[in-house]
Image 1 (cartoon, helix red, strand yellow):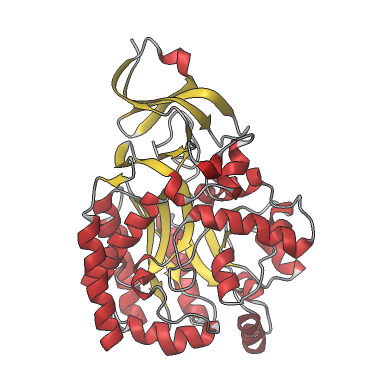
Image 2 (tube, helix red, strand yellow; image 1 turned 90 degrees about the horizontal axis):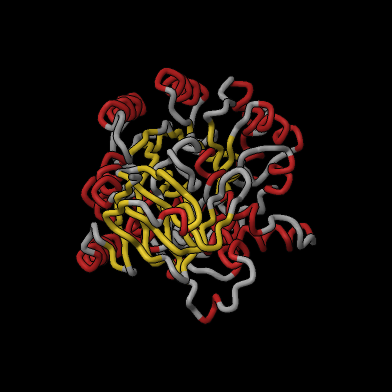
Length: 436
């Protein structure tokens, strides 16, 4: 007799597999940390099941994947809004970050993880300071994460000079090797804050350990102009010249690109993290995502940090991504709901090098699953579930979140974190930042 630890039954199942298969009255069987079967609910009547989760009136789908954020920046939410990127970074963010320590980053990351789980995100990619604390927070809460310490030429509040930054990165690699939830990436900040030698050494570490390389690139016109002045190339061209464009590279933002840049990204199978709300808020511009997709480039969606978004709700991000590119191109057919939903699920997983283990509901993959309650006024009626997810649903519609086979949120109640205490901790941190 077939068996499962958890059977999610009687829901509208969106698999996000290669065929975008949908099952109107479907079930997903989970054993330990993996999906063992997906099919019609009637097919599971003879299974021996330890627990049944009734998904009636729910959409069952892969958890959303946030390809680019800075989790601990949640403690800067609303601190310095409506400013240009360079002013925002140099006069507010960097000074505020100098006041952080490992404990503050841990506490802030706990709240970020809680916000993501509550809004249906089951995996995120983080670039920040004190990333071991971010990894511990993600592990304690039970969310999947790709973690990397930000590297740049000037001294870090965490590790000091860049030589110690590489040592810290090596420590992360060894400490979290083979962890079921935590994956490590090497994360130089950007071409404008990292020397060619730093970038090449970071890339060499990824090649030695088979890890992703994550970097901000071509985010603003001023960045592109500055790199052109310094190296005679666009940021993408500069990275190509250094020999570090590769399939393991995740290029975050990619707002200001030339046709040659897009050709290079495609030629080297570089992945892109698209952050439309942050790019809009900072007036960085609109990334040419329709052109990237047309060129066959893998694009995953991300929120960026709460200081420039100001939330971690991937449903909001999907809605924005779909509408922004329609108005930019004057074409209502671009970035259709299926395409956008895939940028927040399976394509996001592929962008992080996790496409074989998560991002879709298929047997053998990790059980990273969310249930959305559709019995809501704003979701009634429902002709097309995929359209609803992109244009009507909100993070607050997520009823249950399962990560790696563990139920971490059920009926809107977090099971792995004391949310009230966590919010109180961040209020205290914010008071320290405000009074500093």
